[in-house]
Length: 96
Image 1 (tube, rainbow, N blue to C red):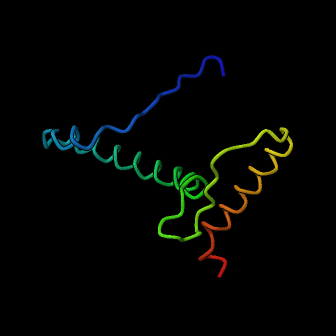
Image 2: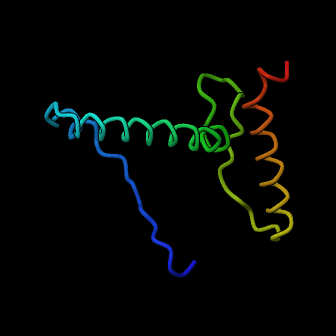
Image 3: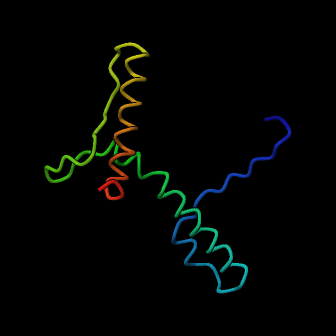
């Protein structure tokens, strides 16, 4: 969108956060960092389920590795099925 200002907020490394002095401004900045970390954890969880290899023989993750050249419609269908399964996997406790 033209005319809108986007502000990008990257997470600061934990070592730099620990080095901050204990002032009210730095405590506010620390709360902002914690909020960014919580949002990032929620956003990255579905990707962990889709792309991570199962550890210790567990088959809990879907372990999606690559898309073969089978056509755009087939790739889109496979991705839609994987995201639907991921949603079911993440909501399994609520569904039981």
